[in-house]
Amino acid sequence: MIVMNLAYDLNDKTEINGKTYELDMSFDNILRLFDLLRDKTIDDVTKVETGLLMLINDKLEQYEDEQKAIIFLELFNSVIGATEKEKIKTDIAGNPMPTMSNDDENTHDLVQDAEFIYASFMHTYQIDLFEQQGKLHWHKFKALLNGLGEDTIFSRIVDIRTRELPKGKGTQKERERLKKLKEQYKIT
Image (cartoon, rainbow, N blue to C red; front, side):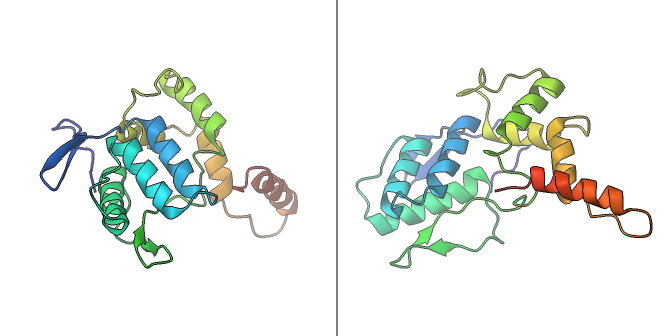
């Protein structure tokens, strides 16, 4: 997995069997890749080929489908940031399929929370994410997202989702209020 290190440039190249490919690591491209992988109407072979096109602009047609799936999975895990702890899903034939990180599964959803993320980036960094499409690197986006302050709408919503319901005498009203907020902002 690629880890951001300020002593070195972000490496947007990968080598596959001796050939070097330039990676498209713009945050919006990676978000579209997540959308692709979540889409249950698209078959696994198409997901792998499309994913390869999105990341390296090559379907790797010289490889069999199984080998493409393995290459894509390794590429996805190494450049996007899946962890070794994640369970590797397989397709019907038993071939490994890429998965998205579930580290923050219950705290936020990059699609559902898009307007809150956008507003929070504008508030904190004065960054218009629409103007940064095709420019802002995925790892920079993640670092900025993780660095959003408590005063942002996104952080407040994450706090609502993760806050435990109060216990004890005299907290019924507060508990009911938090339940309503949790329902309003639950991840669907």
